[in-house]
Amino acid sequence: MSTSTTTRTPRTRTGAATTSGGRKRAPWLLLAPFLAVFVFTFVLPIAAAVGSSFVKVTRSGLFGEAGVTSEFAWFHNYAQALSDGSFLASIGRMFLFGIVQVPVMIVAATVLAFLLESASARWPSAFRAAFFLPYGVPGVIATILWTFLYVPGLSPIVDVASWMGVDIDFLGGGTVLWSIANIVTWSYTGYNMLIIIAQLKSIPVELYEAARVDGASPLRIARSIQLPLIAPALMLTTIFSIIGTLQLFAEPQVLQAVSPAIDSQYTPNLSAYTTAFAYNDYNVAAAQAVLIALAAFLLSFAFLRLTNRKG
Image (cartoon, rainbow, N blue to C red; front, side):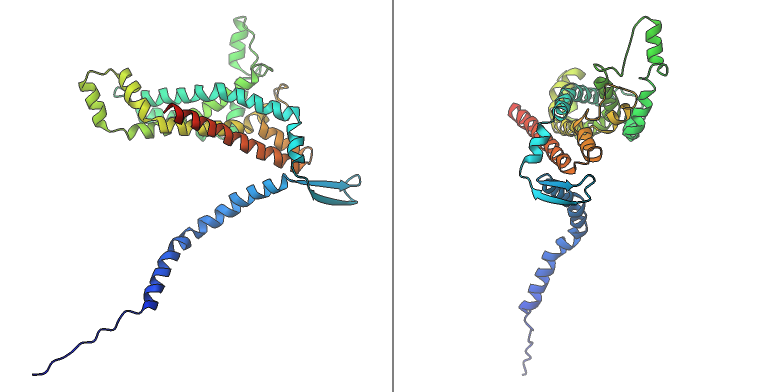
């Protein structure tokens, strides 16, 4: 009686190590294109701006023909930016703008979202598209369109008001800021509305059915169920709006041609743009840009801390 034996070749450790190493490298290989674009378009520009804000460039001669020298200036550019009264006034102006405009826009977006998601709403898709349409209009074009409603002699609103004996100046020193707020609200309310609607659609239907069985009215459902559950969407849209407030640029720049109340440093972004391309002081402009980013971060962080503490 003969017996046969089979020999099994043991799996080499080298092959297992190669497979394990390939699995570890695979995610990085897949992420490499995104990381390369992210580094070159986001990280490097920010690092360059921060580095430029600590450098002082001195040009010798009338037009710099005698040479240009660069030196590390510590916080000299930041001190020069903060000593500019127009730049500080622009930040205060945008702070007032955000206190009024952001809550009005978020409340309007929330009300529209509730109305379009109510059971009695007719043609909700058509109205959603209509309210979202202004967001698709570029800021420059939207400002030009609204300019025809602001400029006397072109605006039918101003003409009708003058016929009724009411003098309206949308581009005056005390009203132009709110004219800009109206354009921003018109442009971004529909965008914020869609974010809130997406959060509303994630609410389980069973909660609505249980509330109706208990006799809850639509107002009670909105207050006790919908508002608490869409809090993350409200927080997200508010933070985006706070950041966008400090980034306001296109609307005042376009209205500057028809409103003498808007100067070249009316908003922080417009002030940094003027410092860089009108005064050719790119290092101070970089310091202003860093200060704007820090202000947006601090305001967003303060809002998050306030809402989390209330929660």
